[in-house]
Length: 162
Image (cartoon, rainbow, N blue to C red):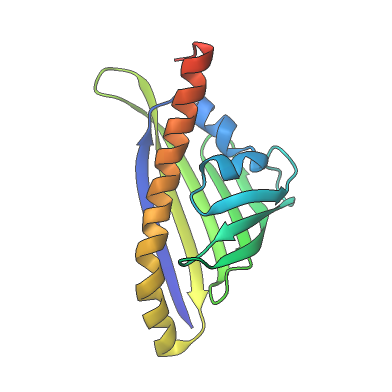
């Protein structure tokens, strides 16, 4: 079975607490996660052991329904969820990690690392499938973090938060 780990990192132009507030809300994923079309079932604030469901875009026009379980929360540092519904990907685990950083102009910002681990149990065919899907996954992860940055900045500018 082929095991893969895909990781992307970005800086979100907001303090860690503000970023954590948004990513902790499972009902808001369709607002910033690039592949999420809609959140079809949620429990609000992420809680270990609880599930949430999404309708997702996969490759090209393909869509799927996924169910995620919150596995681990280290407040303001790390969140781990496992998901099903992404065949042929199996054993899918999303990990979000955060650390506060200062921007060059001295503002509080947040470094976010987005990691996806998964297996594809199709031997050499799995390697081929991964070579096709992984670039799109990476692009989606980068887009998600850019969307998160834009969402937070737009909400904060509308409320006077900085």
